[in-house]
Amino acid sequence: MLRRNFLTQLMAAGAMSKFAASPLAAQTESSRSNIFLERPATGQPHKGKVLLALQAHSDDIPLSAAGTVAKLIEEGYTGYLVRATNDDMGDAPGLGTPGTIGENALHNERDNEEIARILGCKRTFNLNYNNHRMADISLNELISRLILIIRLVKADTVVCWDPWAHDEENPDHYMLARGVEAACWMAGRSHDYEEQLAAGLSPHAVADKYYFARRPEITRVVDISAQIDKKVEANRANSAKGPAGHLGSRLRADLAKKGQRLAVLGNGDDLSADRNYIKEFGMRRNRELGAKYGVEYAEAFHYLAPGSAGAGTDPVVEDYVRQHAAPVK
Ligand SMILES: [Zn+2]
Image 1 (cartoon, protein in one colour):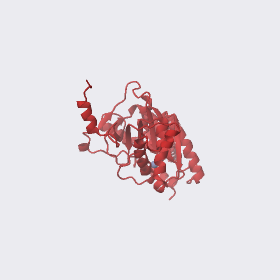
Image 2: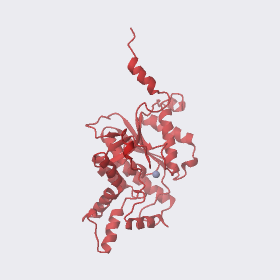
Image 3: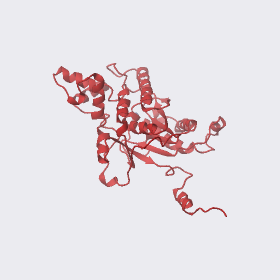
């Protein structure tokens, strides 16, 4: 079955394919005790810091972490959006069938630029590996490219797929995640890729990581209530591949032909119907997660704090030094 027809049938059935698979799996009550709720910050405490949001495809960050990326940028981070593939397996809009490789790549590239703009990113980097073909690319090449970007922008924090997550079936997701995990550490070493240092870059390790996943090991929940409209817009901008783009206005038109309407889609224009549809159905899991933590909307992450990972740092030693180091007399 053609994907577009398949989506249309799902839409008519009131079901969502990608939204249903959105990586915000329910967290059991028993495992919530060690989860930190990241609330909105006052002012811009992250001013001067750099955020690298990395996705394999144009819909990864919009579906999984757009609220958090927008929040961190609003709170002072300078943001960059990295896309690992060229999305040439993603649909092109308005064609009725999956587009050609070139059409898909072009539409998704344009969508991705718009998503970066909506989230407040300074620029994008497109690595342009072929969609769904990252399984056998050179991991060392990927790592070296990511190290270059980390050193170039001096990234302090990354948002990406979790390299250690369960249930992940997309090779682009886990290959990018593995590359990011290694690059975050190696970028800080003066002996790795010394030619980059000779070219003028400096060693720069990433301090902390927000990892998202289909079935995440949740250690941090981020309150994105204030950023939910930006998340809706990021998903609406994902018109080629994303599941949300114009489904609201299409559903409203389909129902109108049968003399029916849905109050949730509003009485206004197609734009309102599209936005309302995304918020109601696409953000449902964000709403359900938020309700568990007493906020309106939330996103879930496996968060690695500064000093919690990476060779060369030993939390036990660091803690011992903090407690026992004395001034030299
Ligand atoms: Zn993806």
